[in-house]
Length: 283
Length: 280
Image (cartoon, rainbow over all chains, first blue to last red; front, side, top):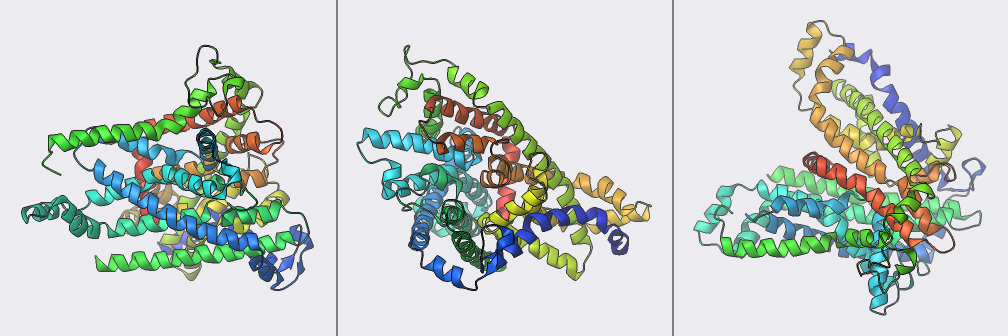
């Protein structure tokens, strides 16, 4: 059978492969190469070695974006997962209207990042103005918490869905046995539900971590890095380096930043892969 | 969970109702303000319902549609999303079938490359991809699907492969023995089996492409073609005073189709997202 299929490779493989080469392989390889060059267009590149990386790492907006992004990852991962798990726990109780609640919580997840960013920018700016506080664009702390709120609104519903599926797959008998043994709801949460939820928790943690690292649209729409690059996440910092700065050196530096960024994201994903594999073995 | 205790559960119902109302408030606020006249949209009155004097009816919506070119953007967004999703479903499923059924080092490398491309952030390739798309004349909404097929292949191939490993080979072998060639086997036997996975992949890819901002911005010519996300960004990005009324109307118009589709296909959407998350 394999041989018969093999003959048809141009039909089965070629369309996707060509698009994949155009859409990913060439841009990726070229991108890696250009990180070591000075260029303004793809064709006028001159090789400069590691200079771009050195300058990227000494660019204070980049290092600031890195730490700002790390802080954002920690805070938003915690809020989204605690929120999502809490909602999932409540909605798996036998209460009325569970489906309607689920529908409502999940909905923001479908709205695109740009639209989402502007909805919250309007709402938060109006609220800040009423409280006589500086607006989002003028205060990096407000921008930070604004982004956390926005992402919680968008992602809690998503994580809730995963947690509900996890909770529903816990065998009923386990929970009943705990109840018969006299476990309080609190104990049965910590001792029965939570350990059985570990696979879902791993998935959700990594989803939120990578999402928060790669975040771009929401960051741009909500604050666009203002004030003075103080609320820039890594992805936006790279974008701005490419398209917001003038000077022949910036594109190369931007590409070097992108390579560093890519390495960080790939490293996180590899850790995730190992963590989920380990969990599967245990079960 | 089996014993439903009435008292606390009713309390939870009430609490969740309140939370859900608050959860929808941001959208409600945009809706409310999109119905006001321009002069009435200010920070101090933003949280108030429109009154008889400030109520603008659908004027902002008319403005968004007639002068801001919303319908055109909607059209381009639909074209890009539909063509891309269609291409991804057909080509990536064929690709995935081939690389799961043919076992050579080449197919293994292709699979790994696809998985790798899922992880790489878009910023890594944005500049080179945009200039390559320009050189190849892929910079119109009609052919942008090629770029989406390439950059979106990873997730689709990954999900299709996951499913195909669970399909028993015997069915396909039986078809081949009965005289089907691989093309017939694929389209008559495998393709119909893939339907549930197709729905999931279609939903995930459609959500991404519909809402995508950066890729179309960098590749398309902004003066000629704007997707909905680009249109809304331009409202804010352009210089001068922003017209808040039409902008909010645009936001509402952008959300509306999503909400309608969501309410119609909720079950599939949640299932699709779930299977994407668990496998990805």
